[in-house]
Image (cartoon, rainbow, N blue to C red; front, side, top):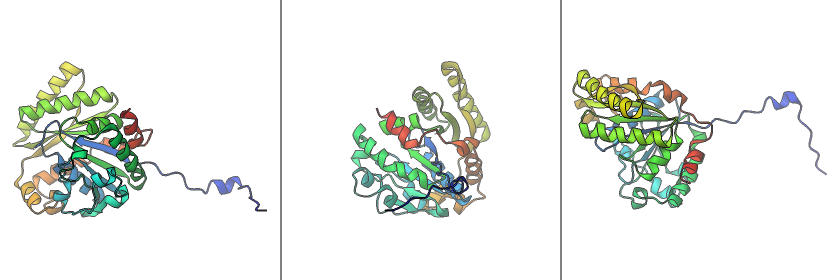
Length: 282
């Protein structure tokens, strides 16, 4: 007969504590062309270079481009994970600075208009990854698709990327309003991207803030602005983050400031992120 010895209290204190789930932030925009994926890939790169275990999930619905911006050629993507062709951990590829990327795939119809059941299956498959990372950054496609709304309902922290164009401001406002409807406790920071000058950025921010305060009674936190910079175009052509290729450039310097936004360090919820996201689907 096998005997089990009861552990002493002193022995129990030696047991390691369960590891916390990763901090999760969403990066989104109301319309395409704001440079959202540039921000997402560079922030992921900078945080990984700090020694954090970072996973970037490209959730752009079937039009993923993070792998191109990072110079990575993943064997698998979110589409393979959704269909069960591979485990989520096997679809993760390593990128510059030690960051990890889970690509969204290109031209995958199931990711463009997923059903509730498909998203539930995907969220369940992604859930184990949270224990392997310090920070998960989710780069969303433009607009307010089903997957984006479910993520916004689950996250504690959203980085909203807009630019001074009136359509970008209008669509960004709509996304901000929707995020607060599905998640009243969400912390939202706004980045004004691709600005010709600080004056242009400040004027655009004031328009956004004024409309938000007038119609919603609150406004996001202004995180900062990123200048239009030829170094970004060069980095795209070379498939490298501008923060790696030209860290002294104006854009890289500005993005470094955005990456230090305080709420990123506290972007954790009382339940694992994808558990909350699955609940939001119901």
